[in-house]
Image (tube, rainbow, N blue to C red):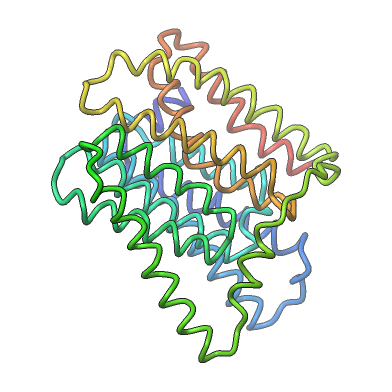
Amino acid sequence: MITSIFSKSKPINFVVVFFIISLACLISFFEGDRNTLSLNTFLIVTVLFLGSYFSILVLNFVSSKNHLTQTSNFEIILYGCFLLMVPQTTESLKLILANIFLLFSLRRLISLRSQKNVKKKLFDAAFWIAIATLCYSWAALFFLLIPIAIFLYTDNKLRNWLIPITALIAVMLIAFSVCFFLKYDLIAHILNGFQMSFDFSVYNTVQFLVVLTVLLSFGFWSLLFYIKNINFQKKALRPAFYIIIWTTVLSFCLLIIAPKKTGGEFLFMFAPLSIIISTYIEIIREKWFKEVFFSILLLVPVVLLFL
């Protein structure tokens, strides 16, 4: 059975994901504008691959450390399959870095459940989101996760609201200082990134229509059971599930308003969605349905390779 292969955390699962991401990067390379083989392009693709694979490791750490999924590796397999469905997500280093920084932030927000070093964790979370915003302006949407986390985890004291603002100011001061010496217009960079576009004509292809259908249908169906499953979790773990839900909602909003729709904007949705779908796969009782459900998600990126 396919699900039994990935039902436990095994090194072989990371090897499988390694090859999946390698394939996604190669497809992105040959379909993009860097299809001239040279040392420079090889180094670029290598960096993009390492960034994409590192995000897998961070996702696995966040998921397993905070008990967002069970002892399976479904989330990293699904994340890799999502990258293969939309290989455009491996094209931009800025997007990959922004996604990694947001995963760092997500880790710090969820770790608030221990109630240890609350102020430091709030500062770190805002710090990483601010850096992600420098890479991709609309990553600023995820600042909304901070007040949500404060309501869920802390006592709502004034200092808890001021600490994230302090982190934001610190990042901006450092960034403006560096850009001043480099004579780079950071304000224009950020403001241009905050443009919005509702032109979805780019998605009017077989690839994106299939991807959107699969992600929305499987994601929404899994989300319904994910929400229902929250009541069966330990009280201390429930806030983390709500944060994952809000992360998914914000990533979907970013997908809609993204100023330049290339497919890369799907990247921010992959991590929370892989956690939600993985959780649903783990609680499916009917073995045949679990196999079919998971198999479809594995086969879709393979089928898209031949379209």
